[in-house]
Length: 257
Image 1 (cartoon, rainbow, N blue to C red):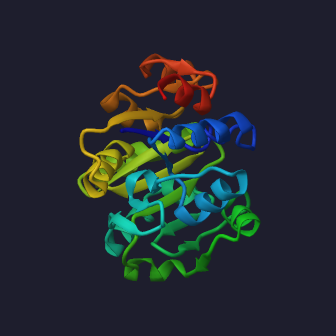
Image 2: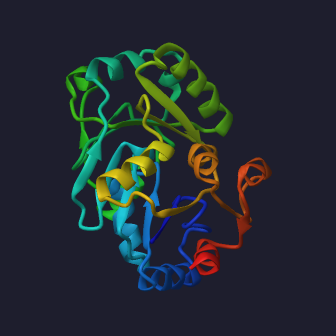
């Protein structure tokens, strides 16, 4: 059995859509008896409605950079946790204060506060009927069951700079992954690489051949660990780390099916 795991934004979802060739490639892959899923920094509630809208069928989802793993029926198989006190402390860091929003991912909702102009959270939530729960910043320390803190900045370099500060101060407890203008903060040890390893264990798929594909820096851990692939539109720095580049996710699936 083969297991393909695709990043979403910039890999499966490109130019604001999922191409028909990718939808058909996933269908042929699964009909051949293989497994397919998406591994993304997005929340489950923001990702799954889009997969269904575009006709992508799947056997698993790894969301929030490995922070939460669900099977094809939506059952939670793994969830990480960032203590509320740590979240509150992170928000005090000066670079973090410049984020468009503070979004905290739980199983069934995303809590949000400190939302400024430029934030895309509410826009996407409205478009895809994604559940948001507004809170006051003073309540962050009391949150529990949070597996990712998401931040957003005007420029990618601001996200990278903020990640360095967060990792320097809290690297033993969390890991900050820059992803374009977004910055995703997960529990230490949680990543897309670890998410795939955990997926194989909790689903009983040990020994399966893995085919990960992604296009950004937060995909690099899984690409390096499993000899993964990328798409032709990825930056040169990502293509240099990938085993090979394909025109699309569907093209990769057809090549290895």
